[in-house]
Image 1 (tube, rainbow, N blue to C red):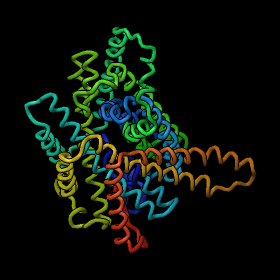
Image 2: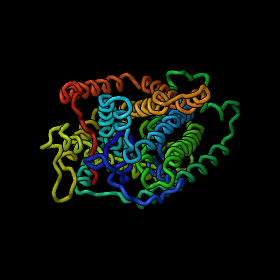
Image 3: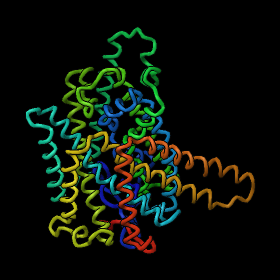
Image 4: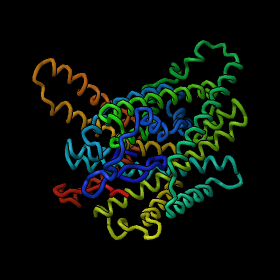
Length: 472
């Protein structure tokens, strides 16, 4: 993921562009060959065409069925945030980093806070993937208990990452194409099922957007705060600034268009699911709810969709664990964490082995105490802080520090440089405030611990504390 100034892997295991120790891009001299369409395709592959399916049950339960509305509201928030990411990528074309943007434009201490929030984000991603994979694998092989599958996936992620296994870009693209084909089959089966069952009530087709009997503002915004997970990874486009044609235009445009494509595709996916399986009916398993929805339209889809999502979460979890390990490696190398342990690299496989084991242990333990829904909210706790930071950084750079020589320029800057980042910040703040109380409490404890550590380590932030990871 490209939000936070950390080098390593994206959420789904794709390669990332990093920073060298001196802050220069390790990708310097790369050809500018990526067109706008290439950037959008990259964004869709990173986010994955089946993004809302894994979390559908949690969203439906939290929003009392208003999943479509939540997905679309989240899209608006990500559009404004995407504009801010794109604009900041112009100013820092080799960074692609929420940490860098906030540290440079506002204050290094706030940059550190942004970076620390993302540490939890990175650690939780492989954890929730482990939980989901265990739940789905149990549906295929119920003879093995869920706790057994949790141990299995935590161990497999760890062992594969120790060996330095990487997912190639071609495999990622092939998986994305396969997921797209599955989505098409789901749409066809859902349409056949819905049209084949008459519905006399007039509000049937509009109820997924608004159901007066269950609608509540807090419920919808609480659902939206989780729905942000659908878009996690869109900001990774900013890491391709040095390889894009006309990056000053195309990075921001691709980021915004990727959010639109994923948002509309996700809205259709959950809309069809809500028509097939009304919110008033309980799911056999909340975490794997979409698999049951698909199976209701056509029985073989239980296996097809279940296997597709299992593979998607497997790849995402494995890549995320290595990304988290490399993040801790960067913190250890910069002496933000004990260097002898976190800054060590295995000589044979060239991976931060200690950190892979460390993350694996956290994933294994956490999988027995967290639910998928709570883990997703805690992940978004960190993500939304980063999004707010990027919007504030864009606001400071392009409006507060901009020169307004005439009233016309001032009005123009208000519409282009004030309103978008301000709205992005406010919407993200509203969603952050609507996270569940347990997520806020645990996230707050994490942030407090990080801030106290930063104060101690930097003597009141008088010394720099780096989060950057050297390039491979």
